[in-house]
Image (tube, rainbow, N blue to C red; front, side):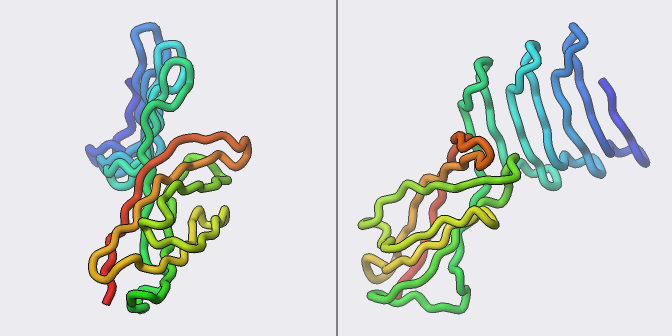
Length: 174
């Protein structure tokens, strides 16, 4: 094991090894908190887990089997009104932005699978820049409504699906 300490706290790269000498884990710390990329490997050297932390909080995770196929994904997405001051009125539309907060790739495309009728979505555009979607939503009913989508991250350089996650946004109409 290799670790770096500053003032008695883990700071910098942390590396653990299998008994064979192959790297088992590589991660980073800042003031004793996991920070940034973390890679865990199979003894074969293939990636088992890719994680990203911010101040010790797990933000993003992909788990791979020994064949390199993704088996589990956590995608950090948020949904919010594009205009926070806009009132949501029944029979009127509003803009909802869904944004991917982190990706391990430089270029990402997002794809959303949703039920347009149930969610009131009548128009959407996918933006590669800033990793976000913009939806125009017409609320299907007065009161409580829920927008749900399954978000898929696609590596834009290879156009390969790299994992997915779910997002839900509750809103109320007047």
